[in-house]
Image (cartoon, rainbow, N blue to C red):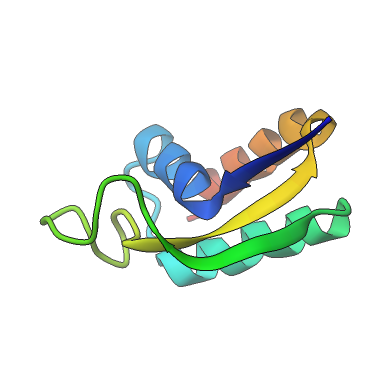
Length: 92
């Protein structure tokens, strides 16, 4: 089954689980997209405003993004995607 999820959700996961991760959002976003693309995912929408809005002291390169790309992909890749997000969090 295909689902639509965005980098905002994945970056939020990394920031919550690995608060010391220093990888900037743009780098996280690119690496997440590359991983999803290799699994057959596709971009749906780029620069969509995040659910939490575009203002606040938590909106920054090492915090949460104000916009994010949305992807369509097979839900079966979610376990592997979260393993990849964990590796990013530990690496950063």
